[in-house]
Length: 264
Image 1 (spheres, rainbow, N blue to C red):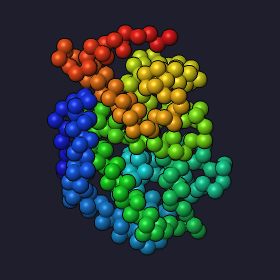
Image 2: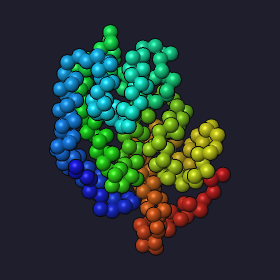
Image 3: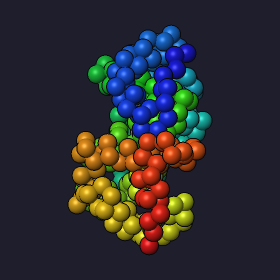
Image 4: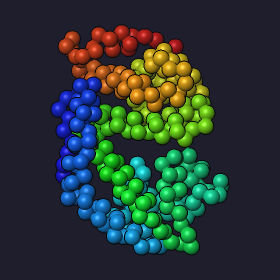
């Protein structure tokens, strides 16, 4: 199995990954294990398949849910089956009660009609591309989880902003996404106690500190490339210091000053 190359920790490692990302993704896509999974997925879904058969095929289920950022959820086969069976047409469906946008995307992309699933060629190709990307992100996490968090942050932050109808909805969605909130908490120098606060208080603090540290007036600004890069830079430098800072650590003195600021 191809493992991504990330020779450095912290922001220097992130910049290396950014520079080599396309080449490393291409090399990763060529590994035999991934190719075999994609061939299996394509063969199984080229024709209609019953929902029961789809759920019973654990390999097919694993590949499919992974394409939607739900790796590991194949172990919750009954939940996945109910989500797909109920779909998204009824606002009382389980998927709306879950409040998980990844499950919503899954149910939207895979409609079940008369107990059968049919996914056209264009939709299959999109799922394959997503599966490749998600699988690469997981492999990055095996080498350096902070790099995986940063990759997922850049992808999920864009999704959150694009699907949300108000600024407040964006802030609350940020709190519901593990990679996004983790990166922002690091970027904004928020202590571990932050997560124990009332959710409305968390949103209030996020707004204030993002405006101060990232110089934004709206959470929609978080997908501005310069703002996104600044957030990831602050996160990576902060995490690098946690690993064992020295006076030679890039950004060390600055991070110490940031960490000395009060939350309240």
